[in-house]
Amino acid sequence: MDPWTEAYLYAAARADHARREILPCLEQGENVVCERYLDSSVAYQGFGRGLGADTVRDLNSWAVEAVLPDRTFYLRLDAGERERRAREGRVWLDRIERIGAEFMGRVERGFEALVRLEPGRIIALDANRAPEELAEIVVGEIHGLR
Image 1: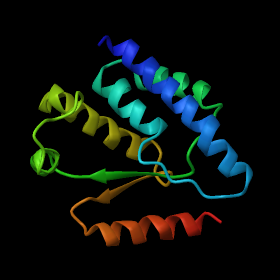
Image 2: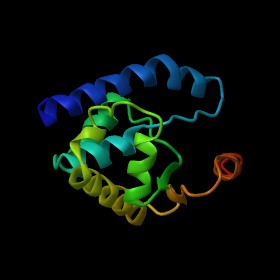
Image 3: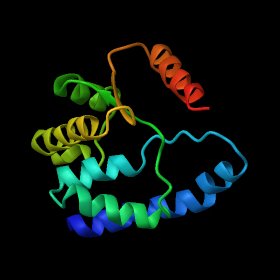
């Protein structure tokens, strides 16, 4: 798939998700937690695919009506452990995982750049921590936003 087609498809999916799920919840005063959102597109398509962080951010910001996250949590994990977890208990890798280590390295460097560019909004967490501990940190951060 062409990198721009991929970027547009992810932006369209985010637009649909924002309009059907995120915006109605926010209008009700609820907190919203997503597995991936705009900053993931910036890292994967902007940095990983080389389309440019600002261009991909602008595309996705327009698609989601500028509904930006108050916090993004980047789960930092070294490449070897990330690959081991991706393969654990699975027969196949998804389309993105099959691209390879060079691509994932660019994505990782993209997330690290975002952490440096927006400290406080984008927070790196050690993904070697227990899932319960990571959840506790995220919930604490969310409660701190109120």
